[in-house]
Every structure is written in structure tokens, then in C-alpha cells.
Image (tube, rainbow, N blue to C red; front, side):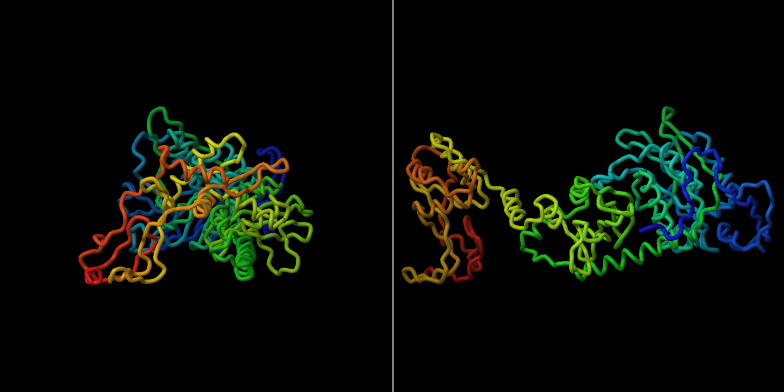
Length: 545
């Protein structure tokens, strides 16, 4: 979707060359020099009666920011007012800071309520700054968030090309071992509440990502009363970088919020409709099993990327990050494919495109695809049966034995190993024979003793039973028509197993059988080795009759 109103058009070319009509230059001066309640300078500038205009001035550098600060660490929540211009804030940050611990003096994005000088979301009246905590990057191919932000010089360059006024400074953790690039971006822009802050942040990240700057959003960016440390250095050798762009127009908050409202209205409605109309997978189905393994942004973005879909930007749907991709079939150059977490907890792909788009579905009001749909469409040419067979084979964790003539010894050893490592164990060696554990299907009487249904007992294995056990524990394959294909257990191996018990092969040994002594003092018969369910309760007196 296009921006309905772009806050500022991007000007390519020389950053120092002004190729657009220069905005009116003015200084904003409050009519009342001692207001009781801090005014909102960026929004009050729309009221001409509150300010006078002077020529040859920079409207951004002279903006008065109303913030809060604390000279102690974050454990101290007592705040004091901090009123300064954007130029004064930049002067405060531009020189290399002192060496010290990370936890120290900090500032908060806005002023506190009168009589409430403590740090909490409820006490901050509005936000004068959008702060981007830059400590990680977003992989445009997989969507994976990794430690370390993009280079600060690159982020500054993109923001400057977008003509977004900002100050950027590195933080205490910058370039420390295992940390990578760490910095903060301070953007003078007013938000009246958390929803507006979310809208401004979303627009900024939308613009950054559309220019190939894959800085990852951080949770702290959205915390209303988040404490932001003033910069300090970890050691004398620590690097400190500072960049500033302050000759652009005042941030157009209204236009950014209108873009976000239009974006949210479309995507939220789409997400709700997609959740209602999309196919519900049975939890026990092969499709749901596949989605549990591969239904995540990393795998789905890799598949889309491998098939020509390019990640262009990110936003938020249902409180989670969503991804906008450009389809290789797009005719208008707009990123009309969205990967998002639907309300039912399933990651889905939504396509705006028409019939030429493989992700679009004819005859459906809502075009969404889950991970299984991507697997079927892109890896198996929309062949459902082929996709099912491929997934069954890929998800089968049983060991494989390939039946070859002349390899009866190695196949025999592999078969024993497969039976021995099966979980739960199904075949045991007892004395000189193989056995398995069975359960009584119904209550029986033995010598006047009532044995409840479900009680475990030992059954000697014969050739048919061993064949079944081998097929359950091992995948057998035989070479036919230039291809290895599924097969039944080798009858030669089955026969050899029954005869080779005395040869010292390492089967699981059956140590003891079920005896009445397994009864608990209260008379309950609990499950023991080989049992799969708890049998019915019975009294000790039943054994004594």
C-alpha cells in the first residue's frame, strides 16, 4: 500500500544540495515565558498566536523540548524537569562523554504531570522525542533478528536522505565484545499518547526498511516512560560517535499518523477477515504438524525469498511484527504480499495481487496461505499428494535399512540396533527368546485371583510379530527401477534375528516380570515396565482368594 500522505519526500543526490523549495525559517517563542504547564512546542507551532516568527533562524534547532531527567541510576525514579532546545540537546551529546558505569543519569521522552515527579507511564504527559534504541538488525531474507545494529554512519545517512531531523550517538555497549553496533537515534517529534508513538515509530521503520536500512525495532522504543541513559564510555579505548541532521523541516506528525491509520485499518481488517475465513487445520493432521515445525517467519521468508519475493518493509499486526514483500509478479511495484501472525496464532501470507500471483486463490474472498501452502505451492508445484509423501518421509525419524544382497550381517546388526533404540522399547530378550509386553483387554480370573484389564504380561515373539515390530521401528528400502523405494522387512533378517538371540547380540534385557508385589499399600496397582496405561484399582484381598 502506498503512503497516503508522505511526511517528507526523499531527495536523492547530494545531501548538502537543497533541491526543494526551502521551508519558511522561523524561531518559535512562547507568548508566556513562564507557563505553569509545559507546552507542546511541536504542535503549538501550528497556533500562530502563540509564537512570533523571525527570519534567518533554524526551526528545528530552536525547538524547545520538554523532557524529564534523573541524575541517579534507573533504580531512582525521582524526576526533575529538563527543558532545552534541540540544539542544546545536541551540544550536550556531541562531546565524548566521561568514562563510567552504564547505569547512571538518564532522561525520559517527555515532561511529568504537575505534582507527580516520579517515573511511570501514567505520569508522563506527552512525548517530545521518538527514540530508536539501535542494538539489533533484521535479516531481510529470513526475518531473523541478530545482535548488532547496522553501521551508525549508514543509518544516519539514510535518515538524512529521508530529511528526518535527528541526533545519533553511540552507547556504553557499542563495539563491546559480542555486542556489535549499539547507538540511539533521537528524533524531535511529538506524540500525545502511546498509540501515536507507535504510529510514528512504524512510519519511521517503514521508511528505513524501504531504503534497505534493516534496523530492528526494539520493545523499549514503545515504552512510554522508558529511561534512556545519557552516554558514557566503558573505557578509554571505547569509541564514541555522534551524528546530527537538523536542517530538515519540522517532523510532520499528522501525515505520519494518517499513513499509520490507513495502514492499520487495512491490515487489521485483513487480518481479522483472514482469520475467520482461512482453513482451520485439524490439530492431529499432517498439515498442522507441518505448521508446528515450519510455521514461523524465518522458514516462510526463506521460501518466499527463494522464489523471488523481496522483503521491503515491516509493520505491526496483532501486536507482532509483520513483513511486506514485493511479488515477482507485481505490475505496479507495490509490496502487496504480507506475512503476519493471524489472530488464531498461525503465521499466514496475504496477497493483494490477482490471478497471476501464485499465492492468490481463485474463488475465495480472503487470500491467505500458511506454511503448508507454501511448501505445496513452491516446493511441489501445487501437488498435494507429492507434498504429503515428501513430508512423511522427511518427518520419519526411524533409522533406514537398505536391503542389499550380500549384506545380511550388517543388516542384522542394524536391525538389532533399531529395535534396541526404539522409544518406547517394544522388543526385549528374555532368556533365549524375544518377547514383548502385552496388556489384558478385559478382566480375567486365574486360580481364584481377579486380574484387571490393562495388566501387563509377557508374550513370546514369533516371526509375524517380529516382522510387525521391525516395520514399526525401522524404515526398510529396496532398490527398484533405479530408485530406493519403501519395502517390508527383509524375511532373511527376521528369521536370522529369531535364531541369533544366543549369539550375544545386544537386545534390551527383560529384567523382571510383573508380580503382585507391585501393589501399593493402599491396594492400587501402578504401571510398571512395559505398561502404557494405569490398570484399574484392585484390592490385595483379590490375590489372596
